[in-house]
Length: 221
Image 1 (cartoon, rainbow, N blue to C red):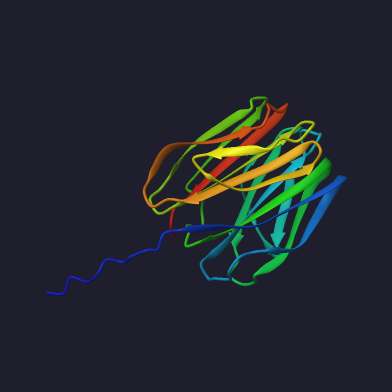
Image 2 (spheres, rainbow, N blue to C red):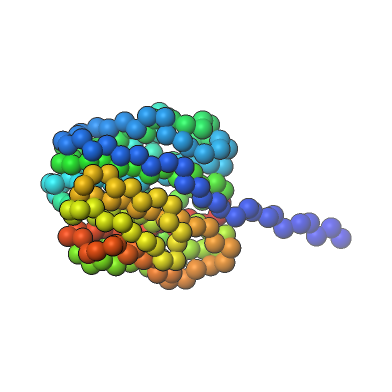
């Protein structure tokens, strides 16, 4: 009797590809030209993380496109002085492209973006976690990452001067000081085994006035 063979699904992978910043005040739209997107693949999604200083509590990201492809919002930590927003979408073709970010109103100071390519991941996130404004030097979120899944986390702060940062339980991928007041920093990893309630921590070189954090996990497809 033929029993067949169980399907084997590859684990998800995550690659940090780019970060960029624009320190111009009062922007309503910003284009980061020719950002690296990683290896083109039918199983690729692009994740863009937007960091900014709104200086007005009602500011939001209206839309994000990468190489002309529209992304969808996953999660946003929004406040007057600390803003982190995750967007993602499938993009099979292209190894570079313009990242265009439009806002609902003028952002008071500076805009930053980071780009990740994720492969063989579910089209919807598995879990999200966020921490709103805090003045602590160490901030953390707790999240579960499924077997064969991935996790990306980002943190943004506002203070003078901008702080450097370090990470615990995820590998730091970028640490961008995008003006004298602000840092966006991010980390990511892939996991062979399930991580239940994993505590992801960012530690700044000194306590900022305002810091916020968003963490997202994905299952393998």
